[in-house]
Length: 354
Ligand code: CP3
Image 1: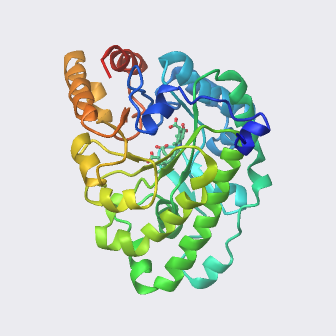
Image 2: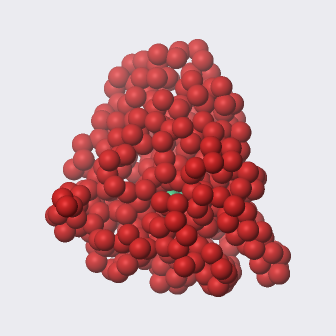
């Protein structure tokens, strides 16, 4: 048997029996695997201490800091996966696009993209520009033991929204205007972003990540019709570019209950689900064959212990009626979450029958 390239070069660990990777392929491991989007970050005092004085993008491009921040929630909570500490705008910044992450706001773009000339001037991502990310992954593989490492990228639509709006947006009005008024400019922009996103995922996979997640966080702002016309072909190309890499691919967005069928067609192995729809219904809408990931409302973690436990049991019940279940929140950990509640949540999921 010829091993995949990364195994041959000694980087990828053989974690086929890790609960996350079993569940992502539709198996039923001894316990339901659990990790949290944004598990590293402001909910952890040790994160706030380590980050003080260092900008977000600098932290994402300093390998020992990236590695240490990624490890913090693994040590503290005993989650079934680490997710690389990074951000969806890291590959844009590394490519030379003027972007910063403003605390309390999010990504802000120096020169919003509105015209064909703006798109034509966009750089592509030379893989060497994200070498610090690959180096951080190298450090992590040595520390993680048998805990899988998840890499990720922002999907073209969510990145395009930041680039066209110039920053976070409630209504995505300039983005939606561009796709309709100048579809050739829109598709050219998406095409550039497919290139950058695919390169970023390839760098992470070559460095040894065990799974990848494509975050199309804001896709839920679109109708299914518009999603199919303006977004789906591009996300399909990104996911297709890493189809043969041998790592499971998760595809996640917020408020995507009406889009799950279309999103599942983009080709990922696992469909991420927010808290607005039961997991078994989500799996049905996604075509009935994909394992699902989710979907506890992150705000529920502020409720009393009994209420949290009842929600966890309901979600595990619904997860048993899907082709496979990875427990997660329906979106990222909120910054004011009590980290002890997250630790208890991991224990609770692990104690239940799969
Ligand atoms: O632990 C993990 O899950 C990995 C961490 C992670 C971050 N960003 C770290 C981060 C991940 C997966 C992301 C992806 C990301 N970034 C997405 C997709 C996921 C999602 O939440 O939907 C999006 C939309 C972004 C854009 C972005 N970056 C936002 C909206 C913000 C928050 C701004 C704020 O201050 O409220 C960021 C900054 C960011 N990315 C922080 C972290 C921990 C906060 C920065 C800080 O701690 O100073």
